Length: 101
Image (cartoon, helix red, strand yellow):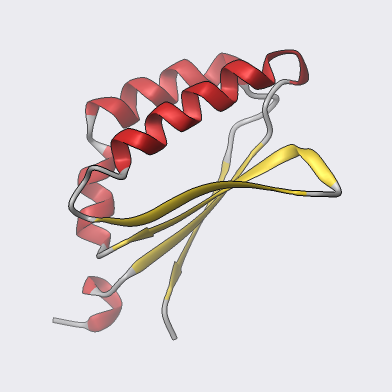
């Protein structure tokens, strides 16, 4: 199988929480992160922010494969969590997928 299809998958998700609901957004994201870290296909997942842009967050994710991420996207904690997040964000999150060189 092509390594590009089955190799590790990295994601960078840019998240812009509503300024009046940042604590709720963070709690929701941390709950989703905790559940995702229990998945066999998740290598790591970190919620980070830049010192100079505290109202924009980034979720850094590493899954063992695209298939593992596809499975993650169907989990209850992810589907329900993303629905709950919609009203907590200023705009939809931006998702970028990356592969190792």
